[in-house]
Length: 160
Length: 81
Image 1 (tube, one colour):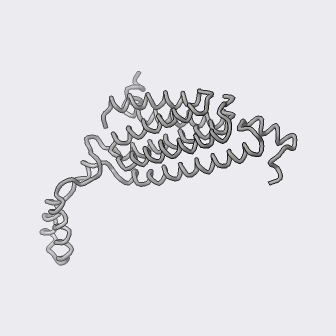
Image 2 (image 1 turned 180 degrees about the vertical axis):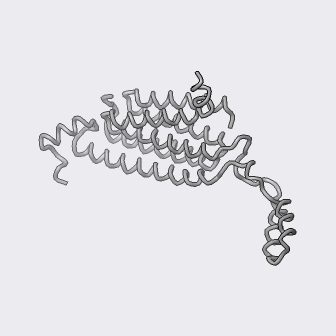
Image 3 (image 1 turned 30 degrees about the vertical axis):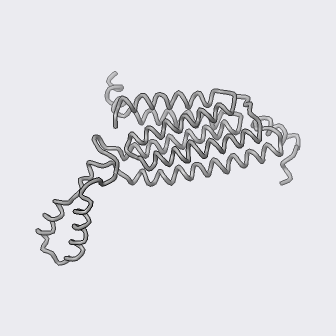
């Protein structure tokens, strides 16, 4: 009970990601159909991406887009760009007025990294599905045990 | 992050993942995987990752479902497990 209250409930999303990853791994290992294996691979990938995106979440934060102070901020940037030899104290006060509090926004770095991971995942899936279509053309089946049986009998597909 | 909304979606995620691996009809498995992708897209929009959310909706739920349906159309629809 203590364990559940201290480590399961505050991090319930991480536990769900672990469960999803294990579902995907189980499918990749035990399922015999090649398309089913690829479905397992997709679930595994999305569980990892979910974990990374949830790292960037902060309590009470919003999406990482600046919605106000647009023209003031731009002015501030050109101002500091023009006067590099400013007194340090003045510069600091000038900065603190226009500073953006990072606690109000979700961390966008994991989002950008995982955007790449999604695209890589889909291209991996496309190549894998193309290979399974070519396996079907050679062997006439998508079941792993039947393919292994046909290879053992010296069936088609060995002469590439 | 809205905890109750999160919990409901995460439970549905596990259910859809399990169902898409349980069904023997590959076409319905691909469809349920599309449902899974849209649920994940909802979760990301709720977590503040809107760019990831619409990429997942377009690429994950759209393109990968089309790839799977094309493969199933060119091969066999039944699965042994």
